[in-house]
Amino acid sequence: MKKRITAFICAAIMGVAMLAGCGNDNSGSTGETGPDAAVEKVTPTLMYFISNGDATFDEEQKTVEELQQEYGDSVNFSVINIDVNTEAANNFPVQGQTPMVIMLDTSNNISAMSPMTYEKDALKEIIDAALGA
Image (cartoon, rainbow, N blue to C red; front, side, top):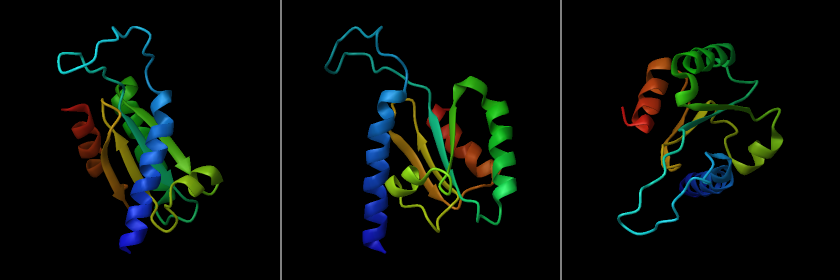
């Protein structure tokens, strides 16, 4: 079990590294580094992994759609069906653990990773924490 969790975390970090280039454009960056340099903020991203076999599949879809409407452009939503996107299934070992949430905050760091999360209030807590609300 410990090896499986470690493998999942490593895969998640690799996936986040791949997604880091998909964030906001850095062309306006001042190029400053060090403790006084401003940290560029990006739009938080909720990666929501689902599977056709989830008992709550329809409810999951509805909840994410409601959250997308509620949060608008302040959060990026990426719903990934591992039965359709086999590359994601290979990069993120989530089979048997869907739905799975990985939340990236305004610094593009993982702020939450939660298996079997589909209740709207729980997802809102994860999103609000990433937004710093």
